[in-house]
Length: 84
Image (cartoon, rainbow, N blue to C red; front, side):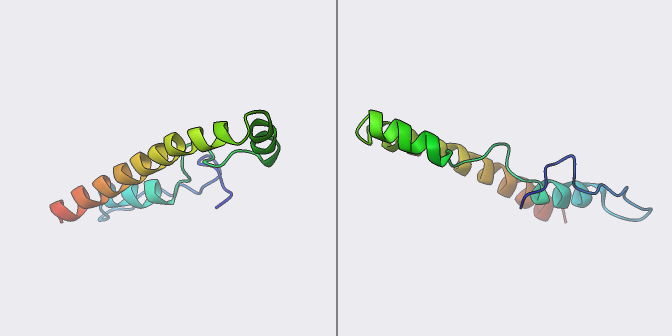
C-alpha cells in the first residue's frame, strides 16, 4: 500500500455506526510507521563495508519492530471483538 495516513480518506462515522469499529478499520488500513526494508544502496554499501555483518545484525531488530506493530494491531482487533 503506497498511501500515507494523510492521504487515506477519512469519512466521519454516521449516526448508528460503531465509532470504535470505525477507528479500528481505519487503523488497520493505515500503513506501518516506517519502511521496514533498507534501501538497496544502503544495504549494498553497509554489506560491502562490513562483509555482510551489519545488515545481518540489523535485521532481527527491524523484524522485532514489525512484529510489535502487528501485535498492537491484533490487540486492538481482539479488544473490539471482545466488546462485541
